[in-house]
Amino acid sequence: MGIEIPTSMHAKPHHVAQRAVYSAQHVVIPPHSVVRVPARVQATLPEDRDCMFEGRHHQAAFYSHLVDANFAWVQAVNDTWSVTCSRKKRRCLKRRYALGGRPPFSQTTFEFFDLPAVGKEICIMWNRVLWIEHKLGTMPMADLEARWARWRKMYNSLSGYFEIPCLREQGPSFYRPLHYLVAAIWGADKPEHEISAILSAIGDFKSTVRMFRQRRLCEDQEVRGRGREWLRSIGRRAHKSLSPRKRTCHSTSVSC
Image 1 (cartoon, rainbow, N blue to C red):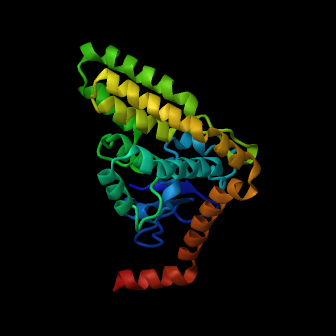
Image 2: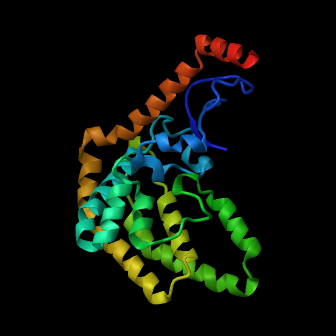
Image 3: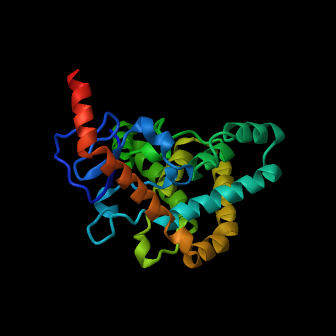
């Protein structure tokens, strides 16, 4: 199971391009290849293909407004580590990301507030629909209404901070990081006063980067095309992997 990104290429459904890339009008990034995805977009991949990949949206528009919003968040978090983190945690975070560049949005937030991963999945691989179905099937009915009321309260508290100004060529907004973050806070089973403090801290921090983010998103042409160019590079690599020469080489290697 991987992440499917639609492209303009057309391959036969039964054709295997490479061991790591399979295509039937899609580029599929398998889980073990997630580490090769740029860090600043790892936490902003869409989960609802029916909504995000409708035909009226340009296939190559990989929502660069979210790419930059994530980058702005991480940049600001890194700048505040020296103030808000203990010396031990600051050393741990810097050592962890020394070789991998800047961490993605959700991973940074989880490190910052000591939140658990949702369903033992990182944000990029989390399936919200399956997670909700699992909770509905395992949660006692007596607790269901109260727990979901708590979910709605947390979601409403944070949703306003995740609204991102979108330009027409960038496609619609989506809220994967928000859903994932709320699910983590909801599942952490922390006392009410700790949850309120976390929600307040996240909201305050998001407010501090809002103006910078909006200025960059709306005025910087380079930023507006960053996500689109990244997805095009994925498409070019997939096209190359589907070339006749590659197919011949792959068929020969498989037959051997």
